[in-house]
Length: 427
Ligand code: GUN
Ligand code: FE
Image (cartoon, rainbow, N blue to C red; front, side, top):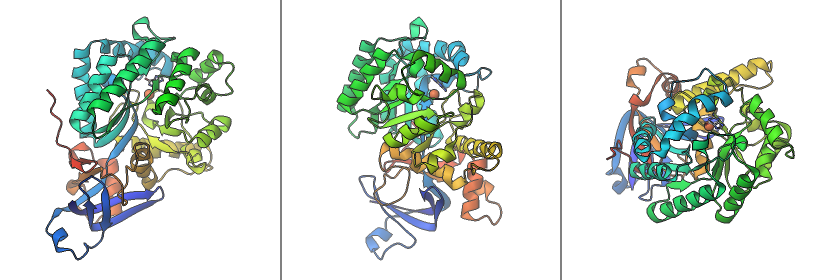
């Protein structure tokens, strides 16, 4: 049992920020939250155990639902092209380097360290086609104590020869990764995820095999969907039988038959949107990436109104930063451009709505994660915003200013499933 005292802020629902000034959060030894209290119950045993964090802010940790670990070195570079030429010119050549496990270890250490730094305690991650490097990435997450879905990427068409695998190789690689994690990841925080890169990269045969593998194992799925207009037209050419881009995944059992993440959805509407709703497929909104690659503005308000699950992703390196706070800023700003574009028909997102998306919305993909309600896993960040809090700001204003003005240096402690995570030192 652990008891922490601080200014507690979280979002049980998108529209409402719950604030408990100088509140208490009681965490059981299994890492689950027993409850949050304004006043500690009359229990002397409890009173003796309180760890007092003073005037700091305690908020749920962030969850990044879409990020490419092997693109870490390209972060902040090479954003002068649209998606398809960007992949061919900058991204595929960098990912091909991960055939070398030493290079992979060097880059992946930095990547996992930075997730820790930014307060992202759970993530859904694309690796590359390389099984050895992908296992290294999974092991680094285990060492750091952070939660992750790690995907060996499947791609066997329209890609450079040195960055393609076969259907047999990807299924075998995923079986090995699953076995490795079943044997070595006792707490289940690191899990495999089936990862067809996107429809243009995967033949029908490959998609069918991955769908069957999902059905056999129950493993979740992640991919890209309706990111950019040229890409969508290309998918129509490649998959003329499919009624929409989403249907090209759905017909192979890769669209909500097991828990599924689809990044972007900038142009998702009509049939595709209805299919996502019906199948419980998550939209992963990556507004930083969508701005950088001139992809488009996803209609997140429409998705939320339709009851579709939504989370946020950095999509590094199409997104140029690992901070989920920056993604939250972009999510609000892009929603305001959408609001202007639709003459107010699409109301913009509020701060509490984007905080919800970055915490509980995305966290729900990992279980009871992203909130401080009873029974939730205690994933939390302790924030010292003293330097921003020089006047009479309310706790709500302090949070808003922290999200717009603060950064990782203000995060003083990080918790994942009840455990405080020290800075990972690898090697
Ligand atoms: N579509 C297929 N691969 C990628 C990728 O690496 N990044 C983004 N943003 N979109 C993709
Ligand atoms: Fe991506």
